[in-house]
Length: 197
Image (tube, rainbow, N blue to C red):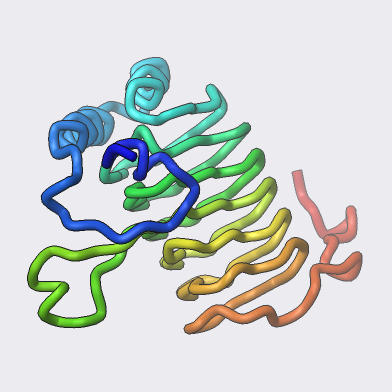
């Protein structure tokens, strides 16, 4: 398996940084810089840059600058998605963002990690595992999602959480480390009279 094939696999892996395709990271840095320089009115230009940057990008993907990622080709959006200000995606493995996903300001999706052993870490040994955010999930402000994690459909991750294990569908979860607090129920629905238009 080539380094690129390993990076695009849904399997976790360990690697040395010497084997990573640096030229692809250079392309992502350039495209992120261009994206972050766009005017709020340049919607078509933003869409075009995301199409070049991401592996697959639904046209209804909206990202507020400033946005940064490692490679871009490993990021896939599967429907309407909103990423708010100052989000970072370290996509050394595939990142799948489902339809109807809301990602709040300051979120970091970090597939990559470093060796725990300090000598190996100094040698540039690292790890990576994919991240999946299923349809209609909401990731709160300043959340960190670590590699190897899936967040279930419709779940809410509370602001400031660090997600190190899978979160099931239909729950509210929060904390460091993030834990399920309770299921989302009919009682969470706002009444029509509580909503102003």
